[in-house]
Image 1: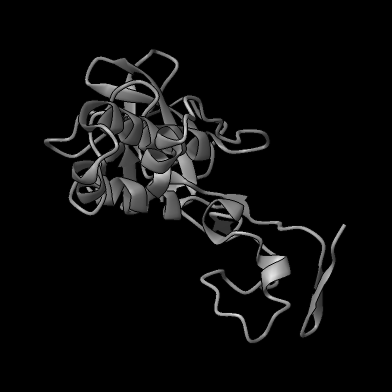
Image 2: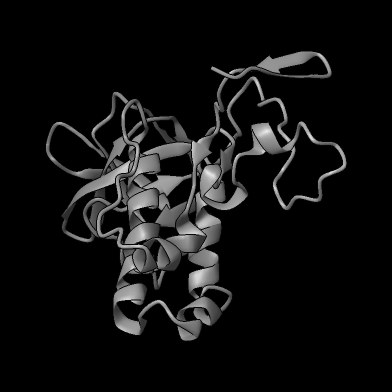
Length: 215
């Protein structure tokens, strides 16, 4: 196995995640008809948002084909913003790897050779921070969204809703509720992951089951 040495590091293999979201049309052109998204040891938010983005891209590719029209659409709204959502997730560094850069290890040895390949660089030691998963909508009761709370939510925190029906919406005017022993909804200033909690979004925002709430 080849080993590449640089300033203060030695690399045997890349620890970056492979990301080909922007190049699905090229994979389609060479006959790839199935893709796998890494989901082991990932948060609900990671899986939900990543699948949502790739679903949008695959549907667009199926509708337009892999020609120039699809490439243009990648840089237009709303697809441009959907792709940007991949950078909001807590994750490792990503790269297109050998798909777009060729054999970087062997080519980098010839200092005089002109190459479009990226130089090999050390990987970050920690994950890239993204949005924080706060809760997930698990149902509705009356006008309230029932939520499964993962991290404490306090009133007026600028929550970001991630949905299958819209890209994202920020809300700090929501209201939080719990139920008392009589089944009545009582407004509170915060909810924790031990509470049976409910959220009433601000006017004009409709949440559905499995929508994600982040910070």
